[in-house]
Length: 181
Image (cartoon, rainbow, N blue to C red; front, side):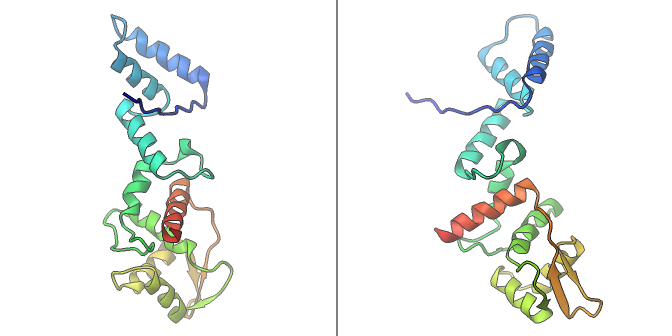
């Protein structure tokens, strides 16, 4: 029987020791195997061992060596990837604001940097990157989330250069890998 190996990254070993000491002091008997796994997982910043395991499994499926795994919620990245087809096009607009933001970062990454776009050009680019036929919604959302700027007469749009959050970077990289496959 082969065992699955889940790597555990601990940023602060002292905090781990304090957390384990505090958790062990709160129980009467020596901890069982599962209790010890849960304690270690909580000490590393996870809710429990199941949360740690889900993160590790999702990370293994979305391996991206450029993104530090301690800062990325790979389960959420995997969930967000389902909003995109095999060609990386947005299938439908998510209902949750947090998911909408992550999807907008993907669209933002496909806008040309430091290059003005007319409304027509931006609509064409957005149309090529989604399937639900509402480039006006996406254009407004890019502006509202401050991922794109526009002139007062809305004739010219520009991508605002910012660094995406770690989850968005992981999603962008995953979708690009999937598009190229």
